[in-house]
Every structure is written in C-alpha cells, then in structure tokens.
Image (cartoon, rainbow, N blue to C red; front, top):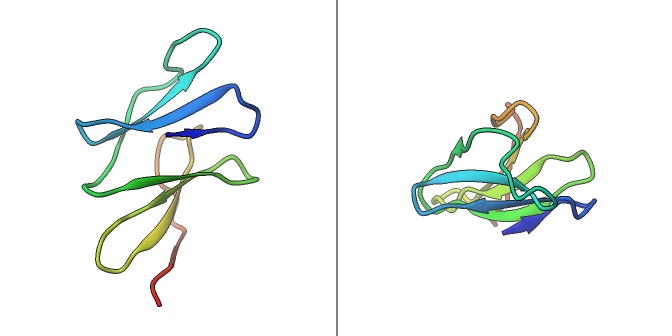
Length: 81
C-alpha cells in the first residue's frame, strides 16, 4: 500500500494481481485497475506522481506506473547489485 504525496490517493496491489488506485475522500476508484505481475511490490510515489513498483523478479527492476494513463511507461531501472 502506498499513499500519494498529497494524501488524497492510495494505491494497493490486490490478490487478483492488479494495482488499484483509490480516492480517499470519496472511497472510489478514479480509474480501472492496472494489471500487475506476480511478486510486484509497491515502493511509493515519486515526485513526478508516478507509482514506483519493484518487479520482484530475478533482475529486481524498479518500474514507474503512470496512474493518469494507467500503464507502465517505457522507463525502469535495475536495482540489483
């Protein structure tokens, strides 16, 4: 679970392997769930508003989910040693 910097939204990874974004005040989802892979873990929100997700695979990559577009942009970085 991760709160955005404004404290207005929360993101969660669900059991059905999606990332859901919730508006806290209205208790609604402002967008459909975003598909997530096995083992993904939420890290938090970055300063640009992207949701940072650790892939949890062998390569331990950090991906950035654009919540406004509902997809992972083509940027990621390796965090393995």
